[in-house]
Image (tube, rainbow, N blue to C red; front, side):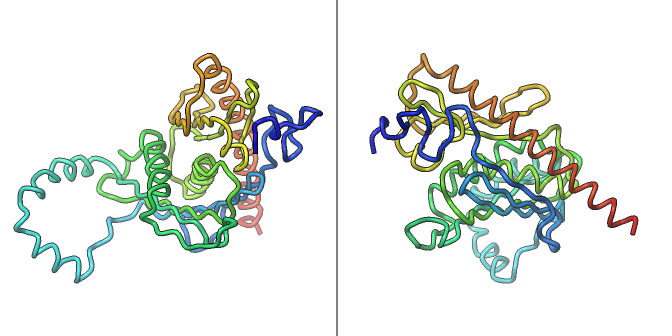
Length: 267
């Protein structure tokens, strides 16, 4: 599909939105009773479930892992190189992020491995986004696990994972410096557009921004393809605007969830 076909004659995109409109967004915290924190988010046709466990003690290795460890003692040089990193983790919590795509989440039904390159890239981006924001120094020698599952895919995977993780972390009561809100933007026919769906991000340059709404500090800036420098500032401002709109939605969901918890506790 050409870029001209992404915009209709009335100036509307393929899903009926205007250039500066977000997709419909629904979110709900506390959807899983067994997790320390959880959240479910829909952004358009993209749906994500997040679960957070921790802070908790770093999980002990199983018997098989212990055997492998003893065998691998011959690799003493590699262990010495990892020693410095282990000492750093004594001063803060380790954040572990795992992402999975449901086999039915995409048109092509197939099971994707957790070692899939694209999934690992997204998990790394989410981890790097939250490491400076979560107050990990309060939980030395512990571990925070963030599990994210994409139930339906229609673009914006990075942004929905970050937004879902933010809600789940807040639900778990883990202190953060601020909300982390993410949104994508692109450029169609030299016009900045907000919150790309899968069809749009497959045919246009895409920029994903994660923002702290209180001080406008950017924690993630990721580009999937080339974007002309003359359009970069406009596209980034469009994405930042979307982040603040998403913050309003997330904050409302958190406050409503707290009101519901207070009502239940008073009964």
